[in-house]
Amino acid sequence: MNTIRHITILGSTGSIGESTLDVVRRHPDRFKVIALTANNNVEKMLAQCSQFKPQFAVMLAPQAAQKLEEVVKQQQLNIQVLSGVESLEKVASLPEVDAVMAAIVGAAGIRPTFAAAQTGKLVLLANKETLVMAGRIFMDVVKKNHATLLPIDSEHNAIHQSLPYDFNGNLTEKGIRRILLTASGGPFRQASLESLEQVTPEQACAHPNWDMGRKISVDSATMMNKGLEVIEAHWLFNASPENIQVVIHPQSVIHSMVEYVDGSVLAQLGNPDMRTPIAHAMGYPERIESGVASLNMFDVAHLDFESPDFERFPCLRLAYQALEMGDNMPAVLNAANEVAVASFLDKKMAFTAIPAMIEHVMKNVQQQTMNSLNDILNVDHNAREIAKDWLAASQ
Ligand code: NAD
Ligand code: MG
Image (cartoon, rainbow, N blue to C red; front, side):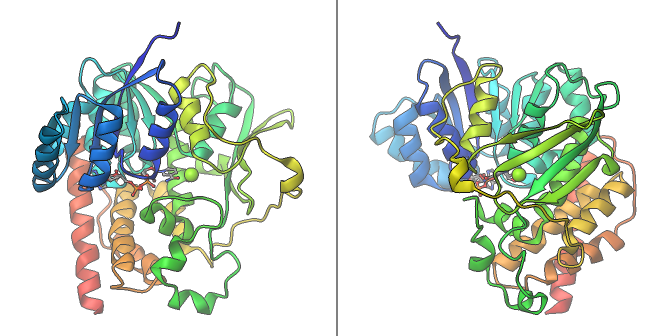
């Protein structure tokens, strides 16, 4: 008999949210959904509510919540509909909730993810932006409140699986030489540099291996995603930037590796399907079915590796720079990147303007230490203002 894990899924209508619910659907004896949350997609939320019957459904926007509440009442579903950021925090910290899937995209995920850690939950972290913006502060909150943090990001989940079971945050003590963080290189790995100027949002979102939300798809195309993941790995595994090597691996079959001092390299492999890391973390420490097909080695046939090209992918260089600088700089990088990606997706600027905007914002924000979540939210706000001014001036 399994004990039932009671979960809240933040961002349930997104790519990770839907994959999470797919895993939940396969294990009615293991998981009970207590709360689902979304930005404004009422239709999708209603379908999820009818199927999973949570106690709470939160829509960020009040109008969306009102619409949902009307239909929930019509259909006589016994669900409390809430709205606003405070409600996201509330459902992430309910006493009856054991585990929180943090799958909101971007800085918007930070407050509810903090709430989950502050109440000692099992935090299943897809929202890498929380660690990028608030690494040290967030890790302290996790430790102080005895929360458990498990990475959902496929690379970090692979690293977690390749580390010793009793890894204590000390790479040297465990005989680990370095972390090899794999990257597909995205859709423009081989495109001519001149052609990048004309790239459309549709082209940037057409990832060769992974089916993901639009923001992370653009991040993969600029390789900012890998930059954010280097910062994420730094905080999760207490690894210095020199101990994290990015390896371009176009097939996305090896999800990352850990190299030990004796020369052993341990890797986690599988089909590129997020249900594997999701199921790994949701069932942890047990292994559970995810619905992912067996990896067919004969179909894969080749595994290729290349070193990253910082000229083609200036965002990766900027992320390393922000990590080296420390303090508020990763939060500044993240905020500028979010404005840049949204502006590109809205067709207000070129793909190649993304790193230009980020570099401008990083140069125009003063470096400062951050001590609280409030400090971080202020840094995020100011960096966005500078990014928007830059865009307005360049029109
Ligand atoms: P997505 O855009 O598909 O979904 C985002 C979810 O967040 C949706 O449910 C949306 O309603 C909600 N949301 C958006 N803005 C919000 C706001 N302001 N307030 C509250 N909720 C809001 O994104 P995704 O691809 O599922 O990514 C989610 C997170 O997981 C991101 O941080 C991403 O970096 C990370 N991640 C995703 C993948 C992947 O394969 N998709 C892989 C690794 C990590
Ligand atoms: Mg990843």
